[in-house]
Length: 317
Image 1 (cartoon, rainbow, N blue to C red):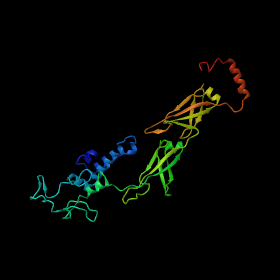
Image 2 (cartoon, rainbow, N blue to C red):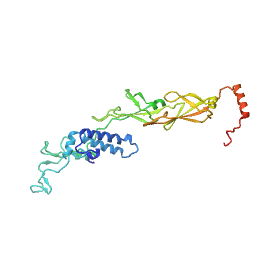
Image 3 (cartoon, rainbow, N blue to C red):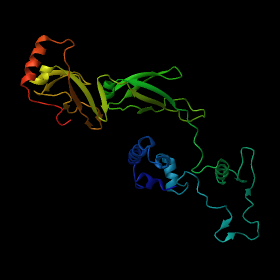
Image 4 (cartoon, one colour):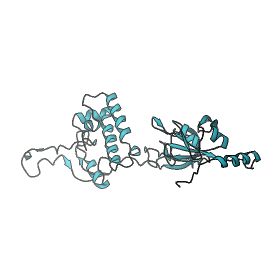
């Protein structure tokens, strides 16, 4: 286990506020949820937490600085009383052991001093570590189970963000804030709102809300852009026009250039999905639609037009 000062990147003279600030910055940057593709993210996050458990506790920090505990929070083992650098004192193979009793006491036992009291060395941590197979100190109480639920929102709500009330399996209602720009299948985590821990003192689980975006019949999502097929009349395509076009934040006035063909795409910048500090665009593809019933006037106009028009749209097709 590395020196907790090194892990948090602070000096030994750092204030409590400095330590807390460093911990929050590192914990946010290395949280496993923000680094799903990094196989070492969980180990790094655990190391940051362990370092803060030492330095964030004034008593533990004092003991660590004095050399009384190590980077894992365990008492440092300096040897049995009665032994020096050259071996047992006072002569005789048994010298130095008269103050110690080897065995297990009735309270869970381990290695204990026959003298008892605060001056005795208690090596129960060594035995608990061996029997639990643990590294890194006593095991933390097991946390509660996470609750996984699903929620469906509209595309417009995905753009602007929204709040939902969802019912947990326990019957309790909670409010979920959906951030703007959320994508299909992303998860919103509610810390500590899950099942309680089965162990005393253990942390509760989380609520994991899997968000689904309901398809919109008008809009198709393409990354951060949104595509819209906009029906227009023949005269609007030929002469040009200003028409109302829907967006996810209300209708806007769109200028159609004269002599526009079906399939022509106009771009409305910043009307797509949010992505960080930027937004995608709305791509409006024009689609010429004729009246449902043929007009005698339109037919006559097209007949006269076809007699004089020298244009073949399939020439290079």
